[in-house]
Every structure is written in structure tokens, then in C-alpha cells.
Length: 256
Image (cartoon, one colour):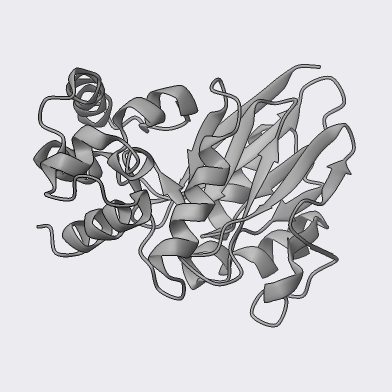
């Protein structure tokens, strides 16, 4: 099977993703920030859309859903725990559930923290992770409804996926995340290299994602909260990783 992922820029800094199996034509979109660019991408790829997968209920991830479904007939899939806050679902899924849209296979991973009902979709055959606002390149989502412990546990679950997994987050936040990361991890050579790459991509208007999970493990401070050197740099030597993560999130929330 041959899989193709199109990154679709929406609103000011959102991304949706179109995942297609090139052999069968089966296609899904992950998240619906804005209908027009998504429908244009679907049309350019042949006009077929089988399902719309939603990661969480925030307006900038669902506001295009109604028009997309009306125009394409796509089935809406989202978290059973958040069905009351999502557009009407054709399939409500739960943590650990495996499902397929034609030959496109997915596994649901509950990732509370940003919101209580947030989920991510791992597409193992496509080697891709669609993680909404849980994991960003060089960052993670704000804790609007969950605790630091919730989010740290969610990030650990995502970090345990195969290293070649392509991380597909919901926003283009990499440059600002990287500027913060340098303040807490200034000697990280892999981070410096990633930031140079990010600057070059953004200078030409290109997205900085997807990005391999193995690269995020080396450069994203929120995935490295268990690193003793990072803990020591924050004055938290010997403290549990979740406390280091909480401090990182606190510092990022006030970073300008």
C-alpha cells in the first residue's frame, strides 16, 4: 500500500491532514478547522473523502465539519467521552479501539490534558500520528482541562510509539516552541539543528511538520522531562519527571 499525507493550512496557524491510500483511493481528513481549504485539497486529490476524524471539541478543530460532511458524505468519528461536545458522530471511539476506513487502519489513544476528552489517532501502516493539540513539534498543548500528570502520561504514551512515526500536530507553533526550548535546553545540538531547519522552512512558507517522533524525543523539552540533565538545569535535580514537566509547562505559559 502507498500512503500519502497532505498538510492543509487552515485559519491562522491550524493544520488539518488528508491521509489517502493511493491504491484504493480511500481517504480521511483529520480535524476540520476550516471547510474551504480542506474541500479544495480533497477535490485536488480526486474528490473522495470517506471519514472525518476529530481529535477534540475546540472550535478551531471542528468548525468546518458540517460543511465538509455535507459536501462529501464523510462519516464523522470522534471520542465517545466527548460526543456531547463534538458534532454528531457516526462512530464514537474509545481508548485502545482499532478501526479501519477501507484499508486505512487506526488505533485510538486517549490523550487527556489539553481537554478531558482529547484523543489521538495512530495510523500504524502509514507510520503516522495525528495528535491534535496534545503534542506539537518542540512543544505540547496548554492544560485547559487536565492536570500536568494527565498530560505527562499522555505524552509518555505517544513517545512510546515507533521512532519513525510521523508526528502530525494541529498547529504551526514550532518556531515559537523552539525559542522557548532553547531557554531551558541551550546546549542541545539536535535542538539547534532543528531550529535552523525550522527557520529555513518558515522563510519559504513551508510547514515544519510532519516530523519524525525520534527527532522530537531528542529536541522537545516536554518529552524530555525525565532527563536528569534537564531537571538539574531547572533546579529540580532528583525530582519526579512529572514535576519537571509541570515546571516546563508553567514556564512556557509565561514565555514571550
